[in-house]
Image 1: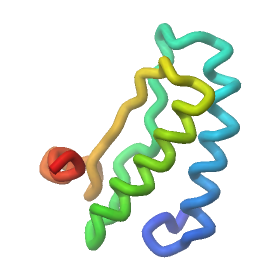
Image 2: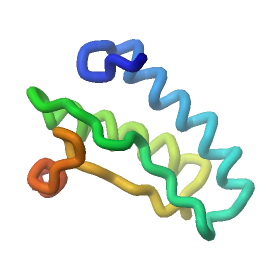
Image 3: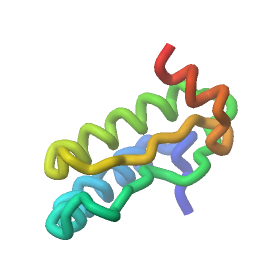
Length: 88
């Protein structure tokens, strides 16, 4: 399984995964497809690390699928508090 909180290799793999998925999904069109980078990420000890990884992954998606409505989420299992902190 993923060890995104502690593994730089896994973080790179997540970005690469979306770099490959985005062009394939983009061919289907943006209507009705709403990619979510990762459901309920933890990163409880380092929410800023999740915000950074999510931003990197979003850039990878937008590079080939710019019109995708992408679901973003905060760290600590998608907490609203951490979601709002991403933009502070």
